[in-house]
Amino acid sequence: MSAKDYPETLDGRYFVAKARLWRKTNPALDDSTRRAAIKALMQARRGVGVAATDDDTQAARDKVDAAKRALGERGPVWWDDGAPDESGKHPKNTSYADWWAGLDADAQTRGL
Image (cartoon, rainbow, N blue to C red; front, side, top):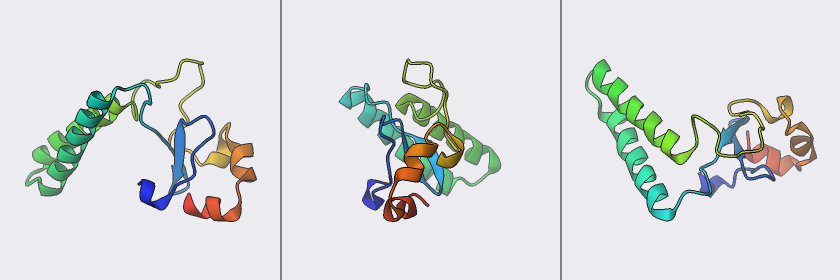
């Protein structure tokens, strides 16, 4: 995803793609934990693509979810200041509305 240079919130919690906030990986994860979770995520995504049955697909999707949770991209938030999870929302409908409005048109376009 970094190849597209998605806009990132100033607090480092989210990036914007497809006009939605997506939670970033927990920056407190040590390198080996992060790498293992990314490897598990990639294997699980491949599993979704090659699944032959609905049960296989669901099992692979469950593995994707588990890897995303290990990375901190789903489940309980990884920050501790009490701010809510605003994943999946358009930035203009969140506490990041002013930040989003202040981005130049090129940055906003990269997030669409």
